Length: 572
Image (cartoon, rainbow, N blue to C red; front, side, top):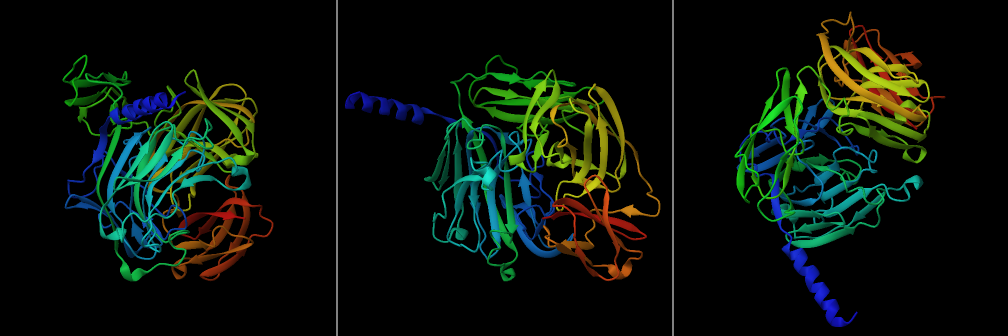
């Protein structure tokens, strides 16, 4: 190939790239004072990860819009056992994309201990739990390095079995002097072949797809946005924290999401056939000229409600400017049904997978004739090491009915838990059900002991080997629970703490209101509810020696004549 042909080919490629047009498909300018738009954002709650110090809330003290700017604020205050509060908002389910350009204008706070981040996580964890399904960090900043910004992606990598996950990061980058003094425009451009990180129109990092292997490129599924301000933790708190600069404010001017315009105008609008409702479109055209404003109105059938336009938002009517070929999926649900897609009509979404020891597990999930089937070829034999779950459930203190059809090649115990989706991830309810080799309908009564608005329903299948099948999962409320005898289980209350957690050989239990309680007992239970250890508590702080308890997760339960509280602990 001569030099002239090479130049022509290069020019054609350049023209093709430059001709690629991005159109905005989602965004928030934060123009309305108050809490963030509930049709676009929801909240993470609790103490969640990385040994961070803050408790995430949905209060205006921690997250609000003022003067067309989103403020996420970290405060020093006692809240549910934590000494600090902050906020983390997410777009999961109503703002999810595969490929595109995400642009965010933000101003980071400074001060030792701050950890603001703009990042993306997979909507469905289809390759397994973190880091197998990936993470895209649009921007991270830690106050202990006041001049540096970080741009990174995470994935399983080839050497996960050696205890190291894969990542591709820019390392510390000096975008501007004193980045905490001005708004910076952060941009991620994500295509099927690479991810690019930009700040103020300059590219700082690029990760090219190495191979068609999810271990190094899980970035071919939908991801959602997270905007949060953490405090302390394993990275930002490595040199301690400086409370003298509190409160800290992470400011975000706007979020804009763009995707490639895949054809020239006019465009097609495809409404996926609704189930249990219909959609009115205005104007209703065969093809839409570019920049036409379209209004969609979801009308549910009797007994059903509208939930969302999948990956787009919850506003109804939903108005948007059409700038590309667009497919819209409306979701209607039974007003009494608390789960989504328990019939597995098209996929397993929004069910996600949990994997504890990925190097010791191997499984392949599929949908066969609207039935969820998972073929397990390698397992640890521990039920909770492998499972699938639906998160974000809100249940009150009531009695519920759980039904499903299930069968398996091996007759084993299916572990079912209703657990907190935050903090210590402790279980409110634990059930073990024997599954046979023939299809059978199971009906289980679940008694929820407390109100909890952030739960997960988990099916632990780590004991099974071979094919396990499940279908028609339904959860409905039967009646409210008004009494639990003389004893009320209160897993939300944080009047006792367990530390260190994880524990190696021993740990301590501290009860803050020891003098107010009577008949105090401590029990250590296995995840399936078996009693492994018990003792009387005679003072506010007690040392517990784990002795012959095998490594793993366990439940620490403290009970008195009036209440029962539980926390989850990892014993090494």
